[in-house]
Image (tube, helix red, strand yellow):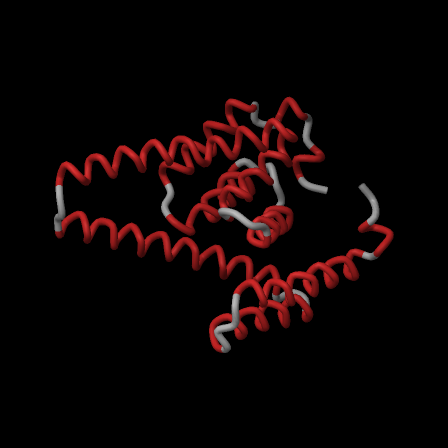
Amino acid sequence: MTDSDHQDPAALPSLWEIFLIFARIGVSSFGGGLSGWLMREFVTRRRLLSEADFLSGLALSQGLPGINVVNLSIWIGYRLRGGPGAAIASLGMIVPPMVVAILMVIILEQIGPSEHIRLLLAGIAAAALGLALEMGVRSARFVIRDFLPSVIMVGVFVCIVFLQLSLIKVVLVFAPLSILQAWLKLGPQEADKP
């Protein structure tokens, strides 16, 4: 159960509010840091989801094909307002940032190459990397509470970073193990409940 399951639906954000939240985060965040901004907004600030629930959604969104943050926005929107919430959240995450990106490309073409622009983009990239690292550390702290998830996490890291195995092969091996571990921890009776 999530925090949103315990709340009066009237207390949850409207579809328009969901769109505006995702649009604001989408146009004001950069790179991998989006997950961190989403966590701050929906877990810390608004308390609409628990940290455990959010991290479960993050793990699911990273395990599915497509853009992680769009998958996560769909998941959060669905948790808050069902199918319409999922659609609106993904539109909020995609459309406004796309418009801003197109406008920035047009402006940068007009300005031409500039050392200041290159330095600005390098600074933005460093900040985005820092936010992504913070999200990774937070997620890792959540996982290392149990032995088997820790082994899976370290195994994936070693296979990709040190053994340089194909990401698809690593996912095909470790994703079923991770799902099995979660199912066994939850218990077959609990896992079958809607």
